[in-house]
Image (cartoon, rainbow, N blue to C red):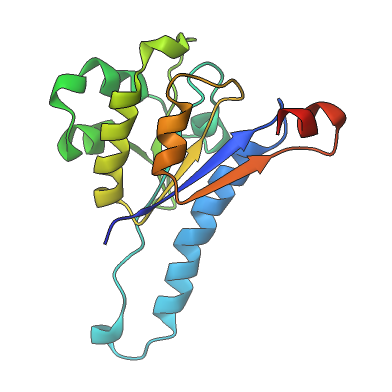
Length: 171
């Protein structure tokens, strides 16, 4: 069955969306792990939960920094090879954290929002749903032409904000 997409939307800078995204990803992996240990027979052990965190904050993303994962490849590499986008390309681009959590980092340099299209994200998320049980998306604070496409593919959208007038207005 297809994986679930959980999208975190920043309603202001420094609200903790990246920290929340990485912690949700880790919790989902550990939750499945804890359920497996409750089984007695090896045949009853459930398959490993496949979880990824995608950093779509293409201008100021820090998922790889917060998890101390090198950024040899990133989402811009996937975009540059969009004409051959498939599970193999995505798998080759994704970085692995020591816990087993998979990371698709944001670019190292600031990239204009219009460097990506709705069609690109639609195809990327369709492939991702087949590869992972859960994909956690860390969105940029700014709205883009492709924001609606990601929201439409999401099973859950979580606004992340602090209790301030500015954040509530942005929410």
